[in-house]
Image (cartoon, rainbow, N blue to C red):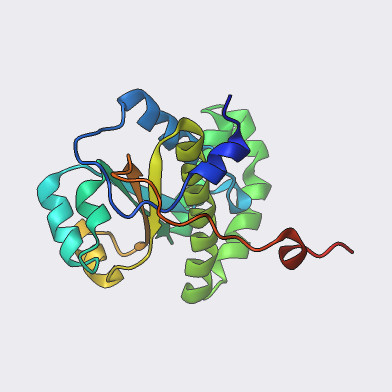
Length: 205
């Protein structure tokens, strides 16, 4: 029976997808749920994900993405964007954490103020980097969920971010960072997986 680790060995960054095969809605929702449940800095989930299925929209993204075939061939293209609207993110978090209970909300006020103070003072570049770290953790959880389900995927950065931001008509507080193409491979990998040996990657102190 496949295990999580065996599935990580099975997966590879799929460059060409089988356009005749789609991902079931049930499985795709599991991938989205893994992304939603991913840990994030301060629990604020400072990212937003656009799910692209429309062929014409993909064509526009393809031209802004160095004509990479995955953009057109994968049934789903997820675009991970950083969020920079600190006040709204914190407000959303407090609302979710209190679940509409005014007493719980009041008890969370010191936490709210501490997070506002921590984040509002950061320069824009630092804030983008901070949000990006959480977005990439979530993307990693999406990759892992795909592998566990036996679904192929490919993380991608090779695109013109300013053009993609324009195509998505992103608000000023969102910036595109990375894609995750999701579907099924059209062929098996031609090379074995290459990874550093444990002794080269880990130091035990």
